[in-house]
Image (tube, rainbow, N blue to C red; front, side, top):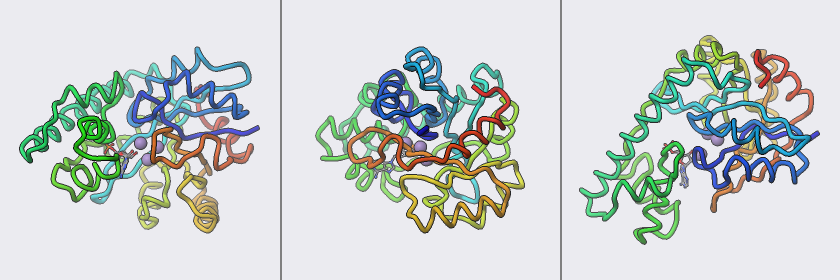
Length: 272
Ligand code: AMP
Ligand code: MN
Ligand code: MN
Ligand code: MN
């Protein structure tokens, strides 16, 4: 039965609400869906309520961590959404993301771009604020034609209004995930491109590796499948579906072997 273990909703930077995403997943014939919003787990309750019969929802999140001056994404699976330490950490991160977005807006204003924080809030709705929301606000104001241009001209790592994000250390992220009964998987190692750091992450508590991903070629997929085997990591996979214009992910693609999903679910403590 097809599954997707990596996707986003309006709770972070996805285009579909949690309920809409479950309906799309069901129409694609998926039997298991892990929703992995950036630094947030608020989609879970709505997704569980809305999920059509035959579709199981596995709790998830995609946590940003800083390692060796780089940003890595850690997928958390099967976490208990009620866990107090996890919720406190996510609330703290949301506050830091808002402060960062305000700083980006202040920089843009200094650079002569007419924009207000309210524009960004309107773009993000009630969810986690991320740079794509600032990009959407820039498009809405007519300053740029596309999200891509917004990142190139203003928001990207080497652009003038770039502000780094506050993030957890890998160790803190793994500890939070473990305490909440979850399993930690390194997201899209093929775009992280620091295979040398993977053994270091394993030392700090990494348990799984996202072998299959929209951005992984067949060769990379084979490479990471072998690496997961060598390092004794559970293989995971997912589309990283966002549903926004310019994002080429398709829900349910690439496929994930049943055995991978079953092994992952079996290893999570809460199962939900
Ligand atoms: P943040 O978490 O606020 O740093 O924002 C990072 C998000 O920006 C990533 O999850 C991507 O989905 C998105 N992103 C990065 N580069 C681009 C781009 N060139 N165009 C559109 N979205 C992008
Ligand atoms: Mn994203
Ligand atoms: Mn990611
Ligand atoms: Mn993602």
